[in-house]
Image (cartoon, rainbow, N blue to C red; front, top):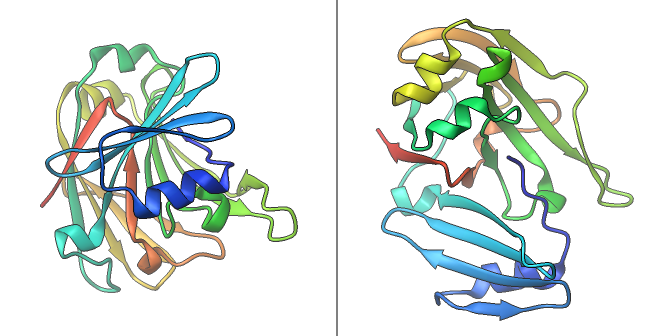
Length: 202
């Protein structure tokens, strides 16, 4: 799941918020919930539907993504219903809180019904600040997607070989090399992830 934040007041609230309360803006009610190891962003639309994404700031872990060094997180899907979701779940490596500011450097998304894992980058048009997925989406087919990414916890390891190119491993098995178009994985400051999954630093 990818969450788009299109309101400046959302960003200002996020940057300054330290409370667990709802704050009103023109089109949203916004809440940042402080969890033990991460923050949860909730956007409640006027029709009362709610979009949430969890995120962690790498500096809170004392971590950075560095060329030549392994960066590993443990991921666990906590909802079996995600196996049937045609959208799967997403883990986003971002420079900024708002996608409209700097896009998504690296988007990792397993989709069980398709037996596929997607790797892609969200670009920002600087002229109008509209976002779009880069055309160079990479897809890996894997018959074991349900078992690996949904039924069990797994380790996702990124090893940058340059500032923009990363080797991707799952449970220490090499999956692919991915080039982040026009972006640097070393610029990552936040990891966003679906509320249906949990992540831990390794």
